[in-house]
Every structure is written in C-alpha cells, then in structure tokens.
Image 1: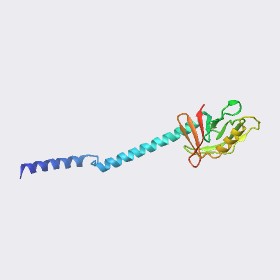
Image 2: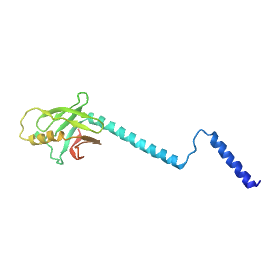
Image 3: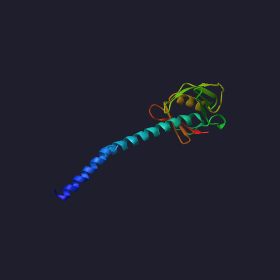
Image 4: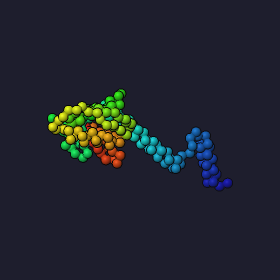
Length: 169
C-alpha cells in the first residue's frame, strides 16, 4: 500500500471517529447562516417587543404638553397655557386641559395602537383657546396609533399622518 494513501486513510478514519463520537452535529455554512439569520430575526423581534412595552410604560408615566397640532406649532390655549394630557391606566381615561376647559374621556391602548373617544369637557367660555380646543377635540377622534420616541409622544391617524405631538412635561 502506498504510504501517502495509508496516511490519508488514517486521517479520514480518525476524523470520522471524532465526528461520530461528538454530541454536536457537523457545522456547515448553510446551517450557520440559517441559525445566524434566525438569531438576528429573533433578536430584532425581541427588541421590538421590548420597545413596544416600553412605549406603554412611557405613555402612562408622564403628563404630556401639546407642542404641535395638525402641523401647527401655535398651540397655546387660554392665558398662554398649553394643552395637557395624562393617561390613567387604572381607569382607562385620559384627562387634561384642552385650551379653555378641562376634559376627560375613555381610551384603549396596546403597545402601538390607541383609540380615543369623544371628550367630555367643562363648559367655560374663553376669548382665547376655544378654536384650538375644538381642533384638539376633533383631532383626538382620528388617532389610530401612537409612538413614543425620547421625550415625544406622537398621535398618528390611520393614514400614518402625525395628528398631534406632545412633549413630556
């Protein structure tokens, strides 16, 4: 027998024995790539879930002040006071100042969707703030989802357009 061929047989036999005794399946590039892709996809999915849950926490932990309504940054109500918003998760209610009056209303939310009903308001009359208040009351009925990024809460309608933006108070 040729010495080169005999050495090759010994090496091949040793590799087969080691592979057969190992608890791990042989690794090939297709398995590694699939596993890496699945891990990356799973990691991205987990990150999205954590961010979504974080959205819910941040939504409820703060009072918010309106900084933009339907593209306009002119959002000062009566006496220059900004519209405010607070979520009460225990009662599933929102409340705040709407430009002239105080308001409250029901809401439902999950990690990304948000539905606000019509608002009940006190009935004061104000020279300044009534038009803003009416615009705000109409805008909240169009909200379909929300996003919290850094210190900003954005209400988004079904077309994906930002309806209102709030800053953390």
